[in-house]
Image (cartoon, rainbow, N blue to C red; front, side, top):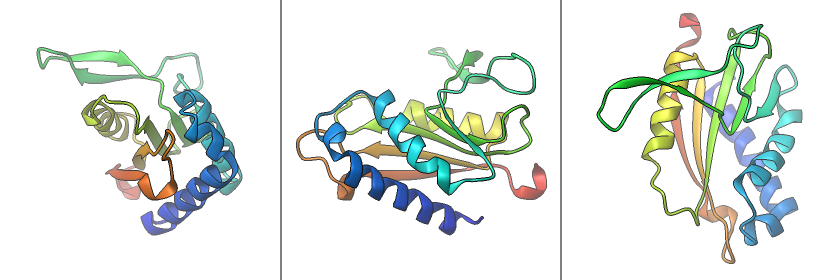
Length: 159
């Protein structure tokens, strides 16, 4: 599946989210609830993968999902991560297809940390695709206000 096909699937899922669950977006319900609904809509679109929210394990055992990120002093440190939504095959790190980080438009925190986290997940845990979504929430929420930013993962041949 190429990026255009993937982007079309994400567009369809976002359209369904705003059509079916516009109330939770307009009411600015918690991010986990919104991610859960979006993941439920994504599941049938990726039949050969598992779609999970806040999945915190890697590999066949119980090894937690850690990545190295710079701390406030710029030094790399191991950080436990709970990606908002992942599309993968459970039990190994060989088919990490998509990792999604979501932020609501009503959240005043900048996007830099989420984008750096996506870069690290794609680079260190070999997700083929990373996607940052800033969803339009609150009383004036709407699909037109959604912002997307893609992050490149390793090329297929590098997996």
